[in-house]
Image (tube, rainbow, N blue to C red; front, side):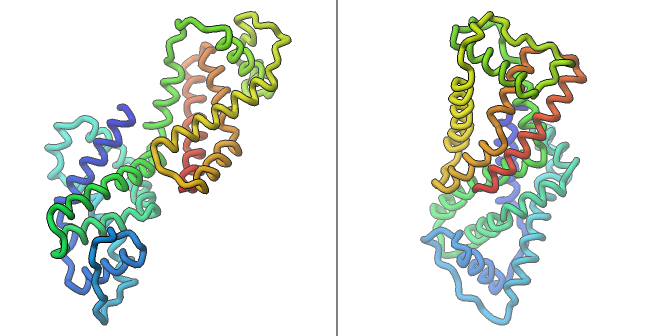
Length: 307
């Protein structure tokens, strides 16, 4: 299942059930309590008129209860209720995700809670229930929340089911077409990366047969400066890819740059570039696949902390 389809299916199904569901019926005081809580967190749209809290409702304890109860109920509505079986039969991708969710529902819950997803639930509820907003405004505000939903569900899904993301990435690396004609520069890059991996013992050459120079590149070729430039370019490429998909501040960009560099990400990926050229049996490939998934999940968690 492609990553994009996985997320889009998850989000659309989640949003449909969330917006159509009666999560909980609140009294006026509770509605005001939620609106004020969201106002204090500065997450409500500027054009939304919030309410003055009525006493004696204990907002703090009530909000804590709502966060947990609404998230639990929403996940149950979306992925556990038998009423959704008809949708599941129509959508294989949804059925696949529901199977994954059933394997570790606690992880999804914990991640969404830590990402403050219940605040999104409350925003949706407030906008839907508000008598101060026009239908056009409600549609606009709910649409904006869909982007936030995509981000949070993507993070939760990636952390809880890394094999669905990074495992497929590994498979793509090892399934690339090797018949493509290489330029001299490509051959030099391959030589330098392989040389680096061998010299730094990133691959056990007593176990795996690595041809350091299959294209007979001049061994006097300066790989040191070449690799430094290459690894820096790879780190920038990884960072820029993330930035292109999300809007980040300068502080966040610096944080991501440090995380990528501190994990030696470019050097680690170089190892897998070399491994992809080696004939591996299924056991060896599964071993490296699991290592790759673990490494990428750890890197992902570090990057998320930058947001």
